[in-house]
Image (cartoon, rainbow over all chains, first blue to last red; front, side):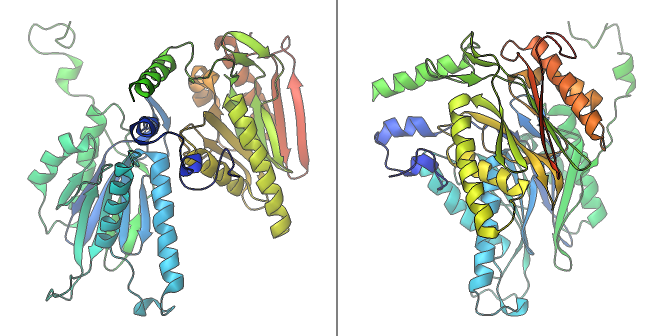
Length: 269
Length: 230
């Protein structure tokens, strides 16, 4: 006899429901509860870099100010997420479980002989996962950014692993680009990133560009925080995620202090 | 098909009404609550109010919302009383089994992740926000917050329940890293008093449990001797 609450994925929903079709569907699509906001990504000279703030909001409340929204999946893959944080925790668990299973069932225990899943494969796998949940009207409520390197496709001449940056959203839409942003970032940061991006950006320049975009997001996104993390994937160092740090913000523009012209206050009423 | 849609719409409308924010069924009890946990050097202080309400009636005025699930692991419960009682029963059962299988006490991290799995996988059918706290030889005193959706977050201290919204400013002001046991206990008692003073769904007495390597010390402050209010 199945228990009323269950550890199995889908919980008690994994049992056959008494309702079916549309009635069951109205039960399942739900609202996100604890949410993260934008994630930004750019390709640069040595690899790929991501940025995200460390806030998870509970509705309009800034509840968790030290949430980690960038995660290492394996030595070649970095994952960032906005949206429901519990679904992101579930996805990271799933990917790490898969990586461990791959490692244990591989033909060899030596790292050099084993072909670890590359970022593009993780991206494709997540597309399947997200689209499958969307078809059941029970999405994982996240916008995921996958960053890392992709192995050459079969038949491709190059021996080199190319930098990879792609997005998977909650309904399974995917695309890849040199610059990626989710949430508010797709409105505010993408224009800045597209303007300033060059494929030969140095690490310092890439980081400064991302920090500038995070600063704009803090100015204009209600659900953003000025405490951020930067992470990079490179060939030499693999995946490195920084500790959280605060970015500087400026509030002393002359027109903030004293508006120009005959306006009183800030020009509003 | 239209009947199911109508029920769904009515349920959401009821949930949005401020008198039934947890979308409770008629007669269902809520632990509209204030719960709190603060770690200190060598252990954890957990605290809660004692009011269980059904709508606007106080069904139980001296409820015990801090439940023991293992020798040094306790859970503060908020949300639906039935859901959280069932969940802690399951956790108690599984942790007991785990202790026998491994031959040692489970860590607080394991208890928190187990609770997270149950809440996350059943998120559509549960209304439970809990704080898991305790002492283990690996991490010392630790506190994990698990809100409605099933996110698990290790925190330097944690507050929860409907009354917690009134004391976010107070705890941000009062909390410091590295408090002693007595400082942590005083902070818990003071902050919960303030929440009880302003939240209609919190009240009664303050129960505290101080968990250390040596044991668990359960105490309560009667409703006429609160540090602040009512």
